[in-house]
Image (cartoon, rainbow, N blue to C red):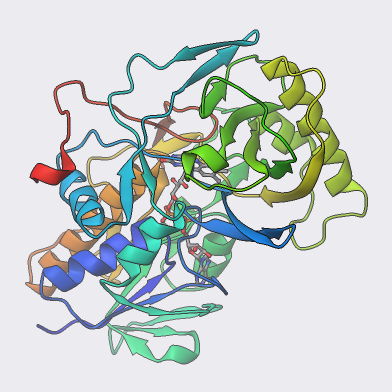
Length: 393
Ligand SMILES: Cc1cc2nc3c(=O)[nH]c(=O)nc-3n(C[C@H](O)[C@H](O)[C@H](O)COP(=O)(O)OP(=O)(O)OC[C@H]3O[C@@H](n4cnc5c(N)ncnc54)[C@H](O)[C@@H]3O)c2cc1C
């Protein structure tokens, strides 16, 4: 089947799109991703050496749920390959120092070697060029092909990332309507009158303590509105890592992310220390552990374009301009979570397959957004009617 496809972005949406295209018979697909150590984007992990031993931290996506029958086979496949397992927590909500297990949460999944296992496994099902930064794209309307940076010509272009990068990349591409929909506003609160994608910024603290915090849960969404942290997770327990230290991931609120936003590539001196101190103080308050154990490691990361506060309102679950053979997929086109990104990738693959077969139409390309229903670290959709058993799929 003809159709050479360039997918710019090796997060969950881009990887699922490429893997699905292969299954649909469109096999000449290359995913370009900037990741130096791995692809995965906002579904990745870091390995840190602490006192001579290696520990994995999930520093972006923490866990995910399955509520859509189209996502279930993907999770089954990941499960059968040993990339994910069910996480029984306890996981829930923390308010005024009191933990309540989430009653609506039927199942949570985590990567077996950290969340990066999800992307690693998906990347074995497609061709990934990494590190592969795409700095320019241009549509040749005569040849009907996309020139993708120094990587040559492609029949289709898929933009599988968002934020300033996608906005800049598409600004002179010749696909003005698509570009208009990639424009972005950074904020911790939604302005419904502004028909642009709204993205939050989040700081993430990875911290190791010399002894255990002895808390009765492994992960908790913090619901104290005045606090600086929105999610705390015992990485040692969640990822079954033994060792003398206890590793935690602490994610800030979007309001804290906005208040402490700095250029990611040029964090001012002192900022990291300030953020570490503020997040540790908040961790102490929300857990009620007045004297936190001795800290033996900290690292903070700012996700400047962390999570969409709104999602594009259309049944297509992706954007596609059939005339220019360009599409966009990503979490912001469905729901701010792993499942949302995967569903968008599936929809994108289907649009391209239809177009290769001669019957695809453009998707709705109007600026129409609706608020995303989500925790600070993403959405965790559940479907009580679908208790998903990965082994039986
Ligand atoms: C701190 C944090 C916590 C989260 N927690 C959860 C959670 O617990 N559960 C959950 O379900 N979701 C969570 N999310 C959301 C989830 O991570 C995302 O919804 C999902 O991973 C988005 O996937 P994506 O493919 O849409 O985009 P991305 O993951 O952003 O992928 C885009 C990729 O494109 C690459 N790229 C960008 N520009 C270029 C270029 N010019 N050339 C080449 N490559 C490029 C990027 O490097 C990146 O790898 C969290 C997000 C954050 C930030």
